[in-house]
Length: 76
Image (cartoon, rainbow, N blue to C red; front, side):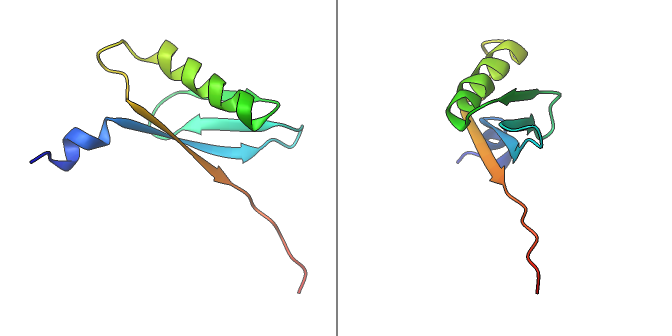
């Protein structure tokens, strides 16, 4: 049976937010990785590139999870 410790390092989670200047910003949770792009499709490629540059081949996570956070304020 695989323990939780063995599965946690298999993915990296990026917190994605819309940039005030337009486009998207993404930062990896627990790692010093930040990237940005004009479109969400471009952001996916940029996150892959950032992970490939940050990790050695044997240490690289197998899955990138993009967690899109959208904050809206509504009047009551």
